[in-house]
Image (cartoon, rainbow, N blue to C red; front, side, top):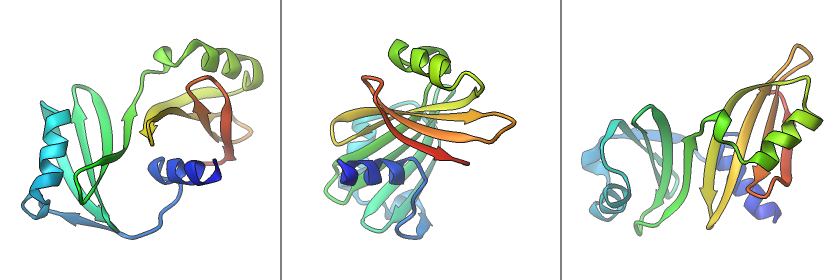
Length: 147
């Protein structure tokens, strides 16, 4: 489970293992492009990075920002997207209202990794900011102070 949490933290941008290198789409292998294009259409503002062995695409679909990590075999390993705060699962909204009532939700993201769904919630308050990572069932996985 700790390995999965570290993977998710990397997906959440909290942990950087390798320096990212911006690359033009012409340098993205066809298998990676095909995997991306088969899942995502009507994208705009597409940018590619090479992070170690993974290709990272940052883009928008509609008004939502997305980040997708694809390995060199064309397998999507992680997908992070902006998520409306109002659409967070009820169990997470209840936990936030009960345990973090002095905080305001600043941002929410939905993260898919290893076939599991997680929600990252950034909270603001005068006492300090928090970054929370929840499983889809509402179980709090990470609670970090600061951003």
